[in-house]
Image (cartoon, rainbow, N blue to C red; front, side, top):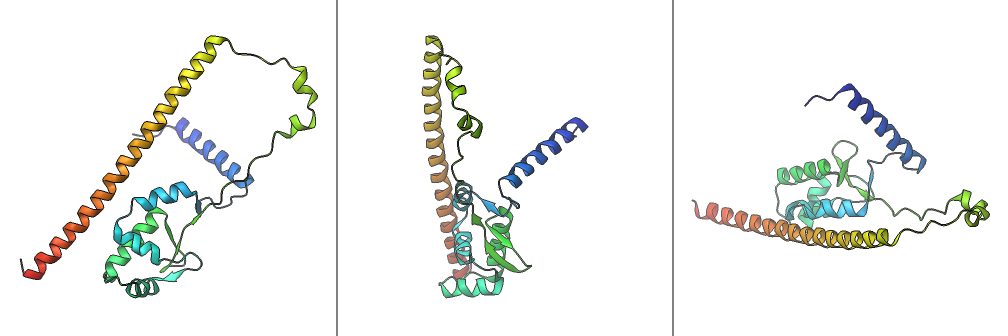
Length: 193
């Protein structure tokens, strides 16, 4: 589907706004940092071997892939070098590891939580404006609709949590099934089938 000129302009404007907001917030390279929830979600989607490789990748300083392979061997993994390199490529593609410089890898850092934002400085400077304007009270039927909406949103959040748990269980079961399949393949190779 081709992108129209209007859509291209809208996307560029939105991107500039986001970049400017991040710059003002002190984040000069937003791709380097990610929040803890995203990091945990990406890590939960990894298979067992990729998790082991991720655990071998350091957080403080970049290691050459040979050092990572040696660390994997030290921890008892007998995975081949090509498997480890494939896992490193997957981790880099998902943003869980960075390759800097070429052939050297470091884990992605989680973004520290944002400090609480101070109250509106304009309202703090002149509190008399708060008492001068009459407070609008919503009609009773509006309150009832808001209460119903709150109940619906809570139910939706609970359903989302249940779905997330079910998906996590399915992913974990698929990883276990994959491990069993690999064991069966190794067993079949060892008996010469």
